[in-house]
Length: 164
View 1: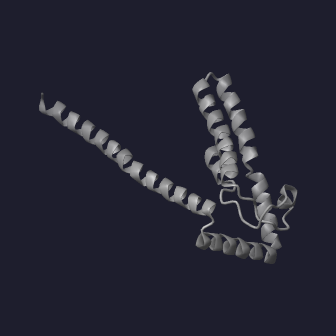
View 2: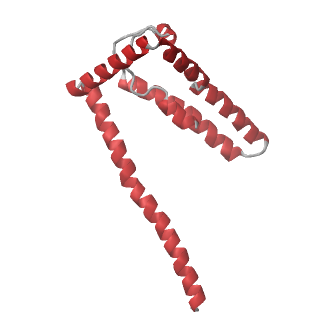
View 3: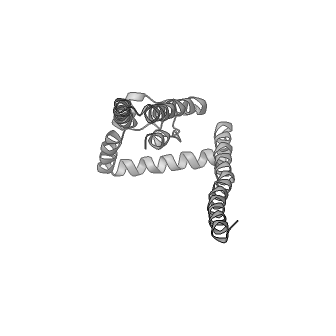
């Protein structure tokens, strides 16, 4: 093998090795984060008192802050309505239709499965966790009713993560 070819092969292998090393090191990090989240979920389901007290205290403090600042609650409701997951679902479904029109079947399929799979996942997690939203006098809360004074830990984050 000539020197020039040998250098090119080493350079290519080292770049590939670096990418592989990065992917390899990301696995344990992601697994650790998932394990911590799973343990916290188990502690929530078991009703572990320190976590329950933290949850109830945080919910009460945030509720009081919202009661003291109604203008902030109103602006948060507007932002919540504008960035509602259903708005993104409709927009991304339209984008998937555009992909289909242009013959990009794989992109359209990936988009629809990701968006609606995330919606189903969020719904399933809410049912598995079995926690109600906090009772308060916010317009959107009155429609849903109230089963307990605990907050739902998921909220709209999974839907937003899947939609964006």
